[in-house]
Length: 400
Image (cartoon, rainbow, N blue to C red; front, side, top):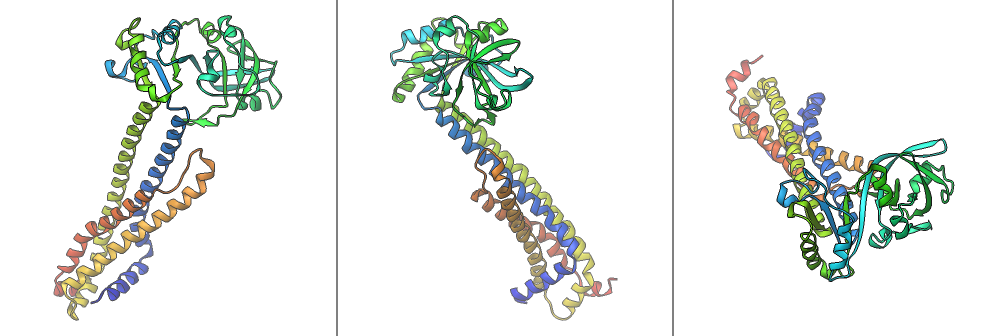
C-alpha cells in the first residue's frame, strides 16, 4: 500500500465519522491556540513595557525604601521607610556627576471632584518642583509649579488630559479648583499626553507639590527619589556614589538604588519565566489532546475490527494496517495544529486594534506548537495503530 492510498483511506474514514473527528481535533486545536495566543500576548506586553522603560532614559537612578539584596524581598517590602527630604540635599551636595534629584510621594485610587463630577484618579503624585526636568515631561498648557510652591506647600497641581476630559468635561481647567481628598487644588497646567505605561493611564493623573501631598496624610516619608545624571556613561559610578552617600545616614537594608537597565533586566527575567510557564501549561493541553486522540482511535480500532480482518484476509500486511492508522493520527494532529494556528492568527488580528501593545503571532510559538502537535499525533497514535496491526484476522472476521 502506497502513501497516497493510505491518505485516501484515512481521509475517507475521518470524513465518515465527522463528529468523532471534530472531537479528536478539538483537543489539539485548543492546545495550539493556548500556546500561540498566550505567547503572543506575553511577547507583545514585553515589547511594550521594554519600550516604556527605555523611553524613560538610561541616565536615571531610582532610590526606593528597603533593600532586596539584604532583606530577601522586593524593595519596600517588610521595611520601615526611612527616606526623607534631607537625603535629596545630601545626594546633590556630594554628587560628582551633577545629579539632580526629584522626590515622589504617591497616592493611589483617589477620588477627584469638580462641581458635580467625581471620578477615580489612577495616580496622584506629590513631586518636587523640578519634576519636569528630571523626568523630561512637558506641560502642554499653563505652567508647572515651582520649588517655592513646594517649600510653601501650596495647594496647586497639574493634571493629565484624562482628568480634563472626564472630571472637567472638556473645559479648560486652568485656574479652577480640583478637590482631592477634601483639599482644593488650583490647577496650574495640563501635562502633555503620556498614554499608558505598565497598563495604567498616565493621563488620568494629578501632580502636586510633595509637601502638599505629605500634609494630606500627615507623613514626611518619600516613596521614591529619582535621580538624573547628565551623562549616561557615568551611571554605574553614580550608583556607587549614591550608595556611599546614603550610607552616611542610613543602613544598607534601608534603601535600594536601581537603574533603568537593571529594572529592564529584572523585567526580562520575569517575562522569560512567565513564557516558560506558558509553554508548560499549553503543552499539558496538547498532551491532553493527544490522550484524546489515543482514546478515540482505540474506539475506532474496536469499531473497525471486522474491516481490519477483511483487509488482512485479502492481503494487507500488519505493516500496512499500522501505517494507515498512524497516518490518521498524524493527519488529525497536523490538521488540528493548522486550524489552531489559523484561528489564533484571526483572533489576534481581531483584538489587536483594541489592546495597548503590539499583538501578533510569534513565529517561534507557531513553529513550536505545530511541531509539538505533530509529535503528539505520532506518539499517541502509535499504540492504537500497533493494536490494530496485531489484530488476528480470523478473530477479527468473527467480530460483530
